[in-house]
Length: 431
Image (cartoon, rainbow, N blue to C red; front, side, top):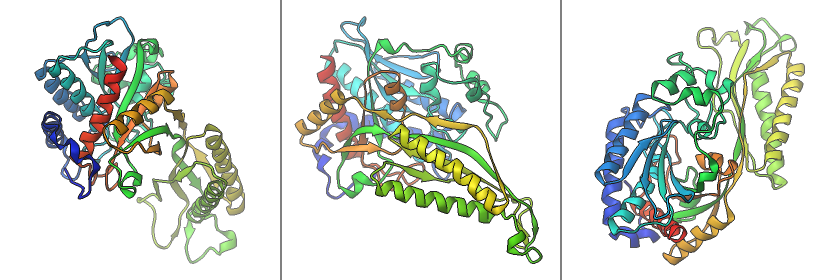
């Protein structure tokens, strides 16, 4: 764990129960799922299952009820005095990208466990049941589809989603889900595994995956909304290979120059939309020629790249995607190339619940912490819960060096502050 020299959350350094539990679990997860560089807990893999096992063992040690639901998610429960009421759910995911960090996702699971463990220790019986979820398959790294575990809960995985294959093993998502105990027959039928009407709210703590809280020197932030995205895992620009010295510019069909021109045009559109006050980010995170055939003296005949646009506004997403397709057509005509696309993937934007935002802000102020509002540029399971009609909210905890890399650096005192805000808000909601 790292420590910030000037930290508003140092007042929570006395929460020794939370500190001991959190550090023990983070250390256990790091030791069990470290890959020599960072952390690897790929969706629907043995390492993801191992992470769930470790957290479940700790929950049982603390006297909490645990189970695996039909989606093979871990559910840890503190029963309420009126269990017939819709329950309050919290948590996050335990999978990671390859060579990722130890806090992305896991922080939210551990925070939820710490909260209900303290309630149980204090003898506090909530009016409604609280369930903490360690969700499967939030990251898109393995199958190109994000929110797989939470989407399965609400019957939102399509046949096309389930057919996508892991490049490393050749097994598709449905097979990998079945391997670890998911009731795949129900998932394939699109049957919800969780009735949204039984869930009163979804509350998720997560590290911030950008630099805003660090730049503003704030330990925590209250999330207002989550960007959705439209993406292609693979787009191919098909030109014509040739000798680099023998083909003049006017006769070339160079896939690299065409792709570079396309991305430059997209960047100009992105800047224009930002100048008009639109919320949008654009990324081509995978790009390359075929290493089996590329050479210094060869005009590249094919380039593969990924495409992603994110925004909190659905209209902006669709408008930029239309620009992308239009530019592919224009560049293709100008450069004598053709663009082909794999399946379009998308995740809807989500707005966090106004009542819960107010409750979390009040809890932060009551603890002497800032109540800064912040949008989420990254996607989270909270978006799926919100779009299923469940009031949802998120707390961000300051984290240095970004995310999806081994250098994630969340200070333990900041984490304790996030837990304290979340615990106060949940206590107020369930008593």
